[in-house]
Length: 268
Image (cartoon, rainbow, N blue to C red):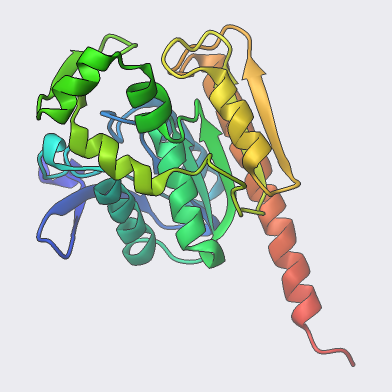
């Protein structure tokens, strides 16, 4: 990799650095948040970046600590770490209103960022959303023996559902996730939300997106189910739907911004 293609780096307060790539452009900008053990070079992130470039829109993607090109030890990180990384990128790399896009675990982090920075968020897009995954897709599915091993300090390692990476689970990750759960009650987010999920997803059941939809306070929220869609949602027609959905959210945000600007003008 030559110097021209190396990602930029954002230094966190603890000294760790986050690798990110960003392009300048008009508002609303887009920030893509990857999934568990994923990286910012994936097909979905690149498809949305291509859309942003074609429309002159700002776009940012990044790797959490312990992921991709960022520093940090994965086993020592947690949801708190990764939410902090996402907030740092939003606060220090981007400006203006944003559409947040989150894939799998990234949709959980997306919700937490939207709750922490409501004034910055104009819309959300969840892709194969996995909110509360440390509870719903880990702890609640583990048998007693597995739970006891985790509580004793064991680190679980097993192939991911997609077979291209390793799932790593620690008890610290499970415990940290408890303070960030979002499906315990209503989610006080009122911006437009679009959720996409594959009915053939064997990693994250589509019913999690359905539950997330029900818990959102937004009245402009919808779930699109893709009949043959797996967890990746990276086939050409799926990426096309992704871009089409993002374009719709951006247009809604632009209309709302224009309406707000018009309403703010003094009457004569």
